[in-house]
Length: 212
Image 1 (cartoon, helix red, strand yellow):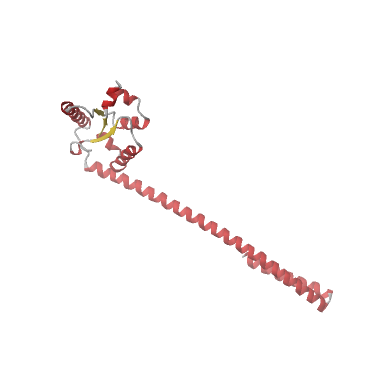
Image 2 (tube, rainbow, N blue to C red):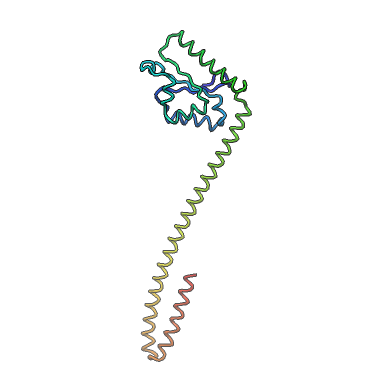
């Protein structure tokens, strides 16, 4: 909620909870408008009546709040106000006046400057840089995944090729054995040794070709 116009950003949250969704909303503001937006932000707590029933001051609630809420308040220079949901019309008007007074004090602290277009453009530029960085990181992840897939596929293909080479060697050896037996019967033992040496050379040459 923005009051009045571009003077202030009022973040409304209920006392007793500062949810993850609300934290994400704050981060969304910071991402889109830059960290400078916190100079114009006021935290408005609703449900002050719950604290009143327990005799707990809003200041004590802030002291006992979570680290996330304390961090946000620190960025906002501890600008906060609490509204009683069950108050009558007169008290509601007083609460509104306190809020406007807090806004005016904040404006004076900011030198009377609004959250200008220049600030918005600067924030958009920062956001674009962040988005580009995220896109580059995602692209790097996709490329790395693709490279892993390629390496895995190459290992698989190499393994299959080695298996086929082994099978081919076994078949070739079987063929050689049969040829040796035939040669042994045909030419006798003397010529067989030289023939075996020739076939061994052929086998080595075949393996060399497969390995390349």
